[in-house]
Structures are given as C-alpha cells and as structure tokens.
Amino acid sequence: NAGVMQNPRHLVRRRGQEARLRCSPMKGHSHVYWYRQLPEEGLKFMVYLQKENIIDESGMPKERFSAEFPKEGPSILRIQQVVRGDSAAYFCASSPYTRDEQYFGPGTRLTVT
Amino acid sequence: QQQVKQSPQSLIVQKGGISIINCAYENTAFDYFPWYQQFPGKGPALLIAIRPDVSEKKEGRFTISFNKSAKQFSLHIMDSQPGDSATYFCAASVKTSGSRLTFGEGTQLTVNP
Image (cartoon, rainbow over all chains, first blue to last red; front, side, top):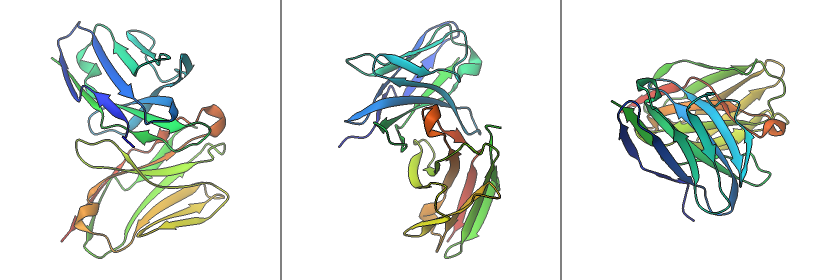
C-alpha cells in the first residue's frame, strides 16, 4: 500500500512565477490536508479538502493561494505570483473516512529566488 | 486558544536514557493528541496517539501520558537510541472541526551514543 505521494519533491521558482504542488493520497483515503512548514518552525494548517469540496480553508492566505481536490487525479496546491516568503516545505496529509489519523507525504520544498 | 505549547525546544540524552517531551494546550475541545517524528528532509511520521478518555498509552518504547485536568500530555521514549534522534512534534485536533492538526513548535532530540 503506497503512502502519500507528493511531487515535485523540490521546486525552484523565480519571484512572480506560479508554483503547482501535487498530492496523491493513500489508497482509500478521501480526506486531504495541506500544511506549511517554514524553516525552523512547526507545521501550520492551510486547507482541508474532500473530493471536489473545500471543507476548511481557514489557514490559507487570502490571496495568491488556492487548492483543489478533483474527482479524478491528485490534489493541487497552487501559489500564484510567488514571493520569497513562500519558500517553505509544503506537506500533504491524508486520512481515511471518519478517522483522525493523518499520514504525511514527503513534502515539496519550494524555493523562491 | 488554538495553540499547543511544546517544551523543551531541544533535548540531549545519552543512549539508554529516557527522553521526555511535554505539551500543554488551552482548547478543551481538543479530543485527539498525536505525536509525530520527523527526520531531516522527510515528512512527519505518526508515532503514537491518545484520546482524552485514557491517561496513558504505550507502544513499544514510546509512551504518552495524558493529564486532562492540567491540559498537558507528554511523550516518554524509554531506552533512547541514536536512531531516535529526530524532531518530535505534538499535535491536537477537534474531530468536529474536520480534524485539522494544531502542532507544537517541535523538539529536536539528540541521543548520544
């Protein structure tokens, strides 16, 4: 049973470009969470999605950030017009229906130059 | 009220010793308390978790102690090994809010041989 998959593992973008981060949950998991980890800090919740629905986006910056989890395919976290402050590790986690355990992917390390 | 405070920030233990990491929370609605282990460059891995209806849970060398009245919980690592050297995060969630995790700041554990 493959774990949570994220790609790319490393992403370098220039200021002003767009970043697209992908997350494929574990098989049988229909809940996806995105977290951001800034250097030397803990993880901060960004958004919680189920298939075709955003359930909680209270941790998402109001501008430039969006997320989706389509009926088919991976969940996507999209950052438009990236700035240096967006440089961080972005982790996706998935959980089974009605259970609390969240299993994390290896993360995407975004560097904005 | 959503914060989880974790201490110490860093911890050095000798091989074979006991590592103890503490967390405190304010939100009495939290009903799930996991611990995650993270190695450099990797995603957090679920280690052990507890719910507030029990005061202690043990899995191998890892034990969670939970004090509901004090709103505190701690991770004990018995017979600590150099391979346990990692960053440990406590977290908490409320099932009715979609189970998004609120993380502590992390503890960097070093086990000397």
